Length: 310
Image (cartoon, rainbow, N blue to C red; front, side):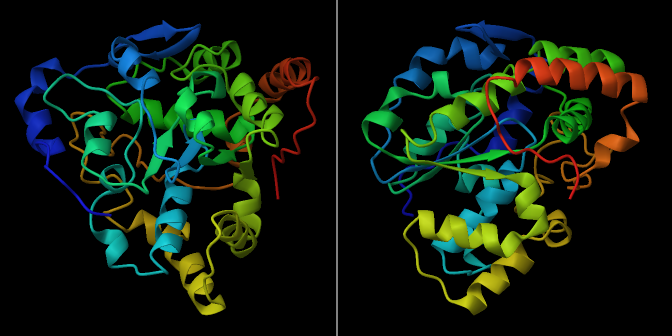
């Protein structure tokens, strides 16, 4: 993908405004809590006009976003690992709504430097996705992860993500998750919103657990959705290149280039475990009962085949 004028580098910009970096509060956009800098830039985000050839990858935070981004990038470049190390994930696949104190480049700034077809990341619930994506019939890949593993992963991420609000205790964090008070709002509304509109919007809806159990099958599913034709050997190569172990050691995918003033990976690595079922190490029996009862109420109107173990 060709580049035009280059914005200031992310790290240079962060250094310029390091005194303005802290755990930002959340602010609501149409009832959805987002980091305050994102909310302040909302009019520009909602007005974004994608090209019909652009692809949107959407997830609730910590549901497998980076994993699918890497799979898609490798599929688009026929498994060429070197091309896919041309820049960190966030520069290759801009984060649509992300916004920081200037001059740190926003997602929209980065998108201006790339020519279509572009791959774009978002954590926005479906009701906040800019209308242009639907009007232009852009393809959308949605990745969902079971709620219990998702909240565990998000908890560890928010501890090391020094521009998100304090997590509080594990017990407090689970309560905030259940109440939809974390950044990007309710997990329940998020997964249900895309599920209910997946057929009407031609959304490819895939599951983290399926990707762990049979990555090859899910990579082929993504390939077909993108109308690509990649050889079996290349698919096998992509399976290996996007394994947790390989990605954890890939500096272009593991966010190790992000300054510690934003991501302090000494607290918790960006790529921590990537497992299914880690929730059993955190939820007490009492928590599980409360969580399950609340889950049953909130998910009663859908039948999404989530799995908490494989």
